[in-house]
Length: 233
Image (cartoon, rainbow, N blue to C red; front, side, top):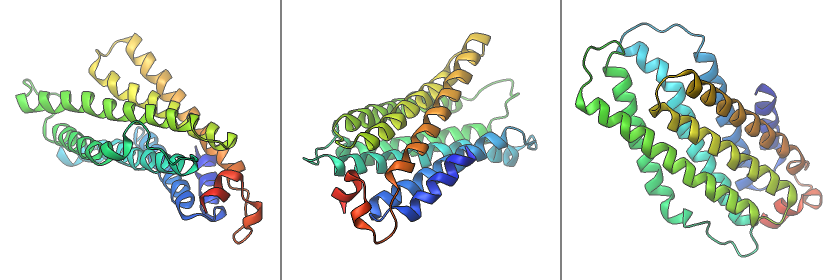
C-alpha cells in the first residue's frame, strides 16, 4: 500500500495534463485513507461518543475519497474516448449519487457515534440509518463500478484500459464488503468479507502500478506522452 501511495505521488509530478494530475492525486489520497483505516484497527479508542467518532472517521474518509476518485476516473476515461461519450448516464447521476452517499454516511456516523454498541435497545432511527447505509452506499458504488468497467472498454490505450479495469473491479469488491455489513456475523460471512477486502486492496495496488507506464513523461516533454495522455492535452 505504501508503494502504491509513493507511485501515485510520483505520477502527480509526472503527468502534464491537469485532469490526469488530479486523478493521480486522488488515487494517492485514496490509498492514504485506506492505509489510515487499516492502521486505525490497531488503535484503542475510548468507549464514548468521541471515541466512537474517531473509530468510524477513517471508514467515512475512505468512502468519500473513493467516490471523488471514481468520479475523476470516469471523467478521465470519457476524455480518452474518441467520441467523449457519457458512461451509462454518469454525468446525470454523479451529483445525486454523491448526495445519497454523503447522506447515508452522515446517518451511519450519527448512529455509530450516539448509540452505544452494548445498548439494550436500539432506537428506531438507528435501525433506519443502518439500513439506509448498507443499501444506498453499496448500490451507488456498485453503479459506479459498472460505469468504470464500461468506460474501460471504450478506452483506446491498452495501459489506461487495464488501469481503469483494475479500479472498477477493486470498487466492486469494496461495494460488496460494505453490503456484507448487513449480513450476520458468522465465520462464513467474516471470511468472505476479509477475502473481498484483500482482493479490493490488491486490485487497487495493481491499478496504481499501472500508473507507472501512464506517467513515464517529464514536464514539458510532450512528445514522450503516452497516446492516452497526449490526446487529452
